[in-house]
Each structure stands twice: as C-alpha cells, then as structure tokens.
Image (cartoon, rainbow, N blue to C red; front, side, top):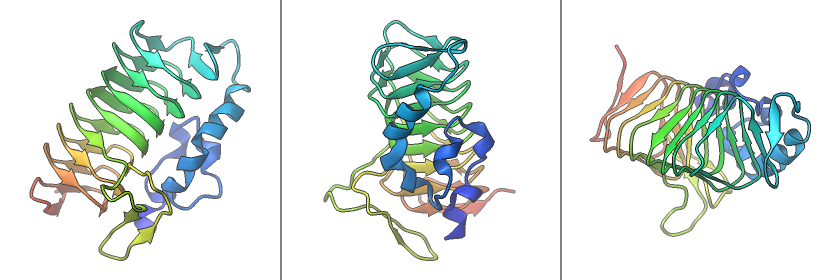
Length: 221
C-alpha cells in the first residue's frame, strides 16, 4: 500500500498545489477538493505574474494560450505553460509550470505537475499527473467504470476502496505512457515507469518498471 502513497509518487516541490496535499495519504483523496483549492489560491496569486481572465480563471502572464483554446473555470495555468490549438479545459484544472496541453486535449478535474506533457488528442479526467509525466498521442484516462460502481484501486498486495465514482489515473513523476493507451479507472503508476503503446492498464503498476502490451510487468535494467 505504501508504494501508492503521495510521498512515493510525487515531488511536491514541483506543483503550485503542494499545500492541497497536506494531511492526505493517497492522491485520489484530493480529487473532490481541487475546485475549492483553485478558488482559494487564485485570489492570492501575485498580480504582477498572473492575470484573471473570465470567471475564476488565473493565467500566468508568461504562459502561452492559443486563441482557439477553450478554458472554463476554476482553473490555474502556471508560468511558461503552453495551451495549444483547440485544447478544451472543462474546469477544476491546475496546469503546472512549463506544462503542455496540446491539440484537442481535454482536461477535467486534474492536477498537472510542472513539465507534464499531454500534447496530442489526450483525455485526462479526475487524475493527477506527476512531474514530467508524459502521455503519448491518443492515450487517455478512463475515469468511470462501465457499471458505474465506485472505483477500487487493485494491487497484488491488496485493494483500496476509494469511495469515488470518478477516478482516472495517478501517474508518478517521470511516467511515460505510450500512444493510444487506455488507463482504466483506478490506475496508479509508480515513478519512472514506462507503458507500451496501445496498452490497457488497470490497478497499481510499480515504480521503475515497464508495462508491456500483454500486461506483463518487468523491471527496468
């Protein structure tokens, strides 16, 4: 269970949302709190670095936002982030410093740590992506079970009931997701792990490993 805890997945120095993690053990505990945290933090951001655009939307002046992007609040886009053509941010989203939200990528109720890249046709919902995590083109988080039951995080050392109807994926720092992969509800991937393209991933995948398309998990050399 400890491998899935916040302290073993994320470097909290790499997100403006670090205070939100205080007192929590597992990252999915934060999902219901993201919107309220944005409203609290947004009103304290320095006006020399951030500007408020629309209702409850704070964008760093150094960020680049394409005119075709749609952004709904509450939302914070941090310094030097890039929001590309036709990105769709539905709200309750924190986009970290230097992060890239690409063409036709959709975000909803997420925390993207600094330097995260979701650059091409990604859906990221009810998820937290750690420092420098990268999702290849067309890879998505699936955040609702087909039977609409509550999400359970499954692992070889036991299962954890989240109490949440919606939970996508918790990606640790430096995780690489291959193109056109699906991260099923309740996926947790440890730091520095790679997932092969076109994979279907479920449950906990340990740090410093490789998840192959057939579901085999091997240690990195």
